[in-house]
Length: 219
Length: 263
Image (cartoon, rainbow over all chains, first blue to last red; front, side):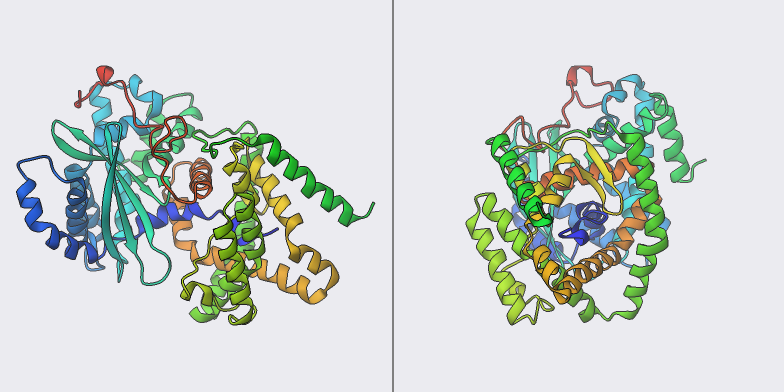
């Protein structure tokens, strides 16, 4: 009966949404400034993965953080940021698991759009209460064809939250394909949940897209 | 045979399971294994109702009446009750440094921290880390087994349920509570208060997950699995082993077959 509190409705699951919860802090601004000259130098060569994430943090704070921004604006800006930094069709195929093969190119593109809006609905609002946190980008490691950038959100109260960004190179450009917060992968979480929805609806992806549309209010 | 003998026997049995299953790689489950899903979903819904009727109102009430320092004390006290078990499991996992850290936390917080109500150890630079017997089993390669939603306790699996029972049986407070009403009140009361505090702290995230998820049950199941993988490897990355690599296991496509874009 030890740690009911730790078990009751599970610890980490909250971290999942919690982590994304944590908006990017001012630390990133400072970090980007110091990285500035280096960034300029490297523009011709391959981009530094840590700088790539720093600039995302920088943009996210200036565009998403704060209570003054209208919620719909925030969602729209969130989608724009994803367009710029994420490889959405890759993410879309991953979260569909084996079902992506049953979709045409057009259907997949539509699904990627829908997914983006759904993620914006889930995560954009997390930036609203940003206050006092700092986003610090660390080093990166390479594993097979992917690059993992480590970062932390330093909170005024409580331990820092670890965020790992998974990047892959597409035609010489780095793009994010997954975000892992305290060991919880956004992609894997969505994939598992979507798989359950599809399976419970006779293997039809249509059921999933209908539900997504309903959530984001397109129906 | 009295109750205590049976308990001791159970601890012994669990330890021999541990020895028998020992493997070199920590377990990192990559897929949900949920053979009793229909039953689990029923329990999940019942838990949701209990939460709505009891835990959620209690947590909201607690949130309103308790000032922040009191809330911190509740968490510290509940965490402190778990430190002996954290130390024992760290030791089982072959991590004497962490075991010593948990033990130090327990001593420091129970004395200078006034019976655990103040987490002075964290201020001294010894952070809290939760170690349970489920993690110990995972550390030695024991997989999660079937997913189980426990009544009241929520998401678990066969391994972690075994771990929870073992921790209960190993916990010195369990035996202290047998012999003293005061210890019993502190142990069980502290645990319940810790649960209310936990529910309060995670309310926003939990409510949002409920609201935005398409299949709340499946989302929880995935989050639980990933969280357990993460605590089993103590938050560290698993970058160098193909089979066991949480980072590797996915995001791979046959690029030849890719229908859109990125060839």
